[in-house]
Length: 146
Image (tube, rainbow, N blue to C red; front, side, top):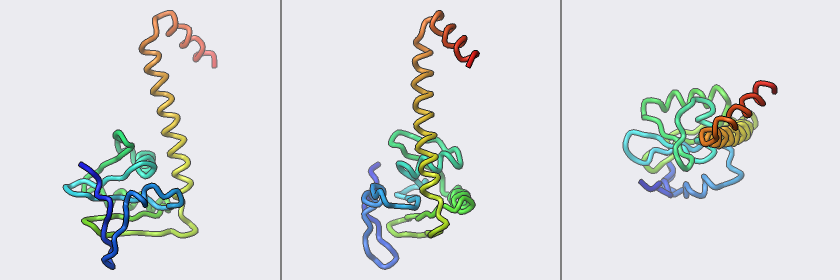
C-alpha cells in the first residue's frame, strides 16, 4: 500500500504529508490513517512511539496500531508533552501543540540513540551466531570481565 501524499485540512486545503514527514524543522508526531483499521507513523515518529509504547517497528521504519489504540497513543504522547497531529480520511482530525513545553525533540533524540544502539546490538548478535565456539568463548570471557 502506498501512503497517501496529500490530505485535506479542515479548511479544504491540501497538505503534502511526505513534505511534512521530511521537514527537519517539524516538532510534532504525525499519525496517519490511510485506510482500513490501522493508524501508522513513519520514520522518527515510529521510533518515538516504539520507545514509549513498545509497538513493533517494521521496515521503513514504520509502525502500525489498530483504531482502538489511538486514544492510548494520544494519552501517552500527552503524558510526555509531545505535540502530535492525527490525519484521518484526508483531513487533520486531531492535533495538540504543547508549544514551548513540547518534548518532541527530546524524545526524537532519545529514540534515534536507542534505535542506533539496538541496530548495533542486532549486528553483534548476528556476528556471534556466526562465530565458532572458540571465538564465542573468548567474547563471553571478555564480557564477564568488563
